[in-house]
Length: 92
Image (cartoon, rainbow, N blue to C red; front, side, top):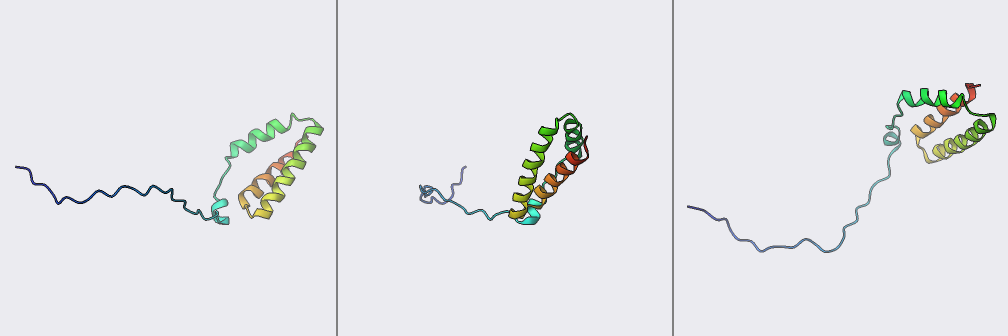
């Protein structure tokens, strides 16, 4: 014997698209991004093979990226680009 539940009218989903606002990431959330140490080790090997001109271009680009990250408050990107600049500064 089968027992049936109460019948309720069907209510279709709303046809309008619901847009939800996403709060911007906080500084703590941005700082949570971690670049593996192996990346920096590989970058050091690669950067040692660059010409002086290539190294200068990267220093300029990474410097601008670091400054932009600093203005936006993205601590992890600031640290990342600063570390790349330090590697470029110590490679011959």
